[in-house]
Image 1 (cartoon, rainbow, N blue to C red):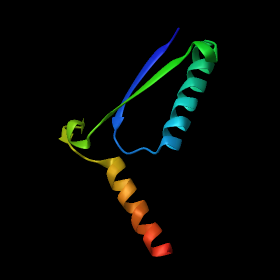
Image 2 (tube, one colour):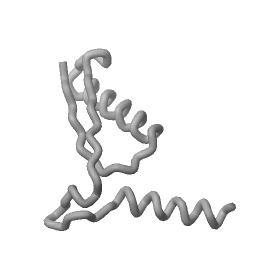
Image 3 (cartoon, one colour):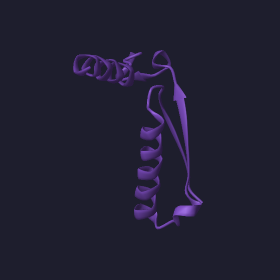
Length: 77
């Protein structure tokens, strides 16, 4: 029974989380043949300041993406 933990930056929408869980489940199923119903996925969200990448902390990639989306939405409105 696979148990997948995914640590990520806060900021995904509920719809994006659902899609991520579905894709992780499907990829795991295809990779190891485990039944969909036996695959568990847990998303653990952290503030950007608690995440480092390549020695750089707080890159806030999801936050910046969301800010860019907000600017585009404001311009369209």
